[in-house]
Length: 243
Ligand code: F6R
Image 1 (cartoon, protein in one colour):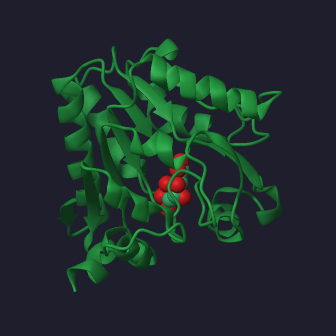
Image 2 (image 1 turned 45 degrees about the vertical axis):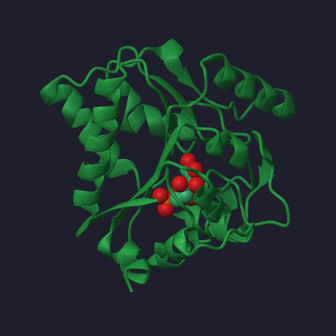
């Protein structure tokens, strides 16, 4: 595992965006795996700036988002698709047909997950997967459990995740309790993975991602089995591993 530790969230976001921009320049038709959530907002903002001010070209870039809430249509303001439009897609020259998402309103979510895995395989897999991490160590919506699903699947969200995500909704009861998500295998099959984490609340999860122990109690610990992972952290998120 490699580490890029920055003193602030803003610096971390710029470092991560620079890394992604370099990857796009090296392979203009790169296949990216993308997260939503609070953490990547600064990175997306910087990628938009790099597009607008420095001509970073998204015209051939292909994307697969990690997850989507079940029951939310793509134009629902709290859907992850809507988040991506607002934070990235509508500000850069990415082609609509190159954006891929698990649908939250598919009639048969299991079929939808199979379709998604096939779509990823059809483009030759994900080149660069970008991840956030939950305070409980989840990646995508792969929550701590006795067993984990390798491929994209339907999942019930952990209570702690519902509580953490309630900040984006009017009230906690509005947070969907289920989602469709890439599995840990879909993530680990990516050629390269970067993970972003910021703030004290992520210290323990980052420690568990790097301490040499692989456990399903902390799904991100499986990243230790991958040969090309870089963590982009701010000082607070890195505090425990620096000790
Ligand atoms: C979102 C996702 C989640 C988040 C995680 C951290 O697409 O896959 O695993 O990355 O919940 O969320 P934030 O960044 O809001 O702390």
